[in-house]
Length: 304
Image (cartoon, rainbow, N blue to C red):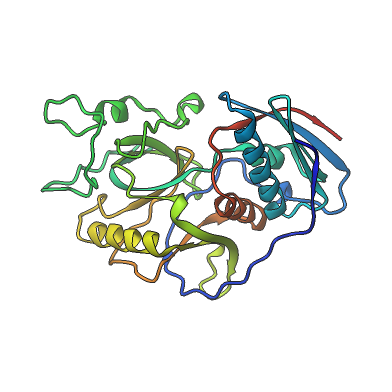
C-alpha cells in the first residue's frame, strides 16, 4: 500500500437532545497538553499489530488510524501499510497521544453487579430474577454462586499489572477496574454481559457543558437499533436496587463511568462526563467515531 495523504479535519455539527449520565472516572494518564499541535515538528510513528493480520486487514487498520489522527486534530497526515506495519506521519503530538491512535477503543455497556472501592466494602449482589445481570452465560463455578465472583474476589485494582482487559467476550460476565477521578483511588467491578456495544454509536463528539458546569464531556448518538437497545437497558436497570441500577461504560476493559439510572433513557443519546480535558475528550470521541481496531497496534518507533 502506498503512502496516502489525508487532508484537513473532519467536522460535524449535530443537534441532539442530550441525556446526561453522571460519571466520576477518567482515562488514566490523560493530560491537557497531549493533544495535537499544528505548529509542532513532523513526527513519524511505526505501529505493529499485537496479533497477526493479513495485508487487506492491515490496510483497513491503516485507513482507520488515519481517520483517527484527523479526528484527534492532526493535520497533514500520511499513512502507509507495508511489511506488516503501519507508518503514520503527522505534525506535532506527544508520544502518549500518538500511542493512543493504536488502541482498540472497544466500548461496551454492561450492567453493574458488584463494586468495591479501594479499602471499602463490596456492594451486595442484586437479588431476584435477572438481578440486573442482563442474562447470558458467565464464568461461574456452577455451584449457584454469582458468575465471575471468584475472579472478582481475586482482582486487586491497586496493582497496576491487574488493570488490564479481563473481558472474554460480550456474552460473558467480566471484572474490570476504574480510577476515581476525585481521589485517584481504584475501584473494581463485577459486570454482567454486554447489552450494547460501540458499534451502535453513529456519532461521538467532545462538547463543553456550559449550562451545568460539568466541564468537557463526550456526547454519544446511537443509530436506531442502538437507541432501542439503550432504552431497553436503562429501563431494566432503573427497576433495580443499587448497585444493579448502574450502567458501566467499559473501554478496552476499563470502566470509564458507571452512572446511576433512574429511568429509561430514550431519544438515542448519552453523555460520558467526568474529569475530561478538551484534548482527552476529543481523542475519545475521535476513537469512538472512527470505529474500533480489530487488534491493538503497538508503537515500535517514533522519530521527529
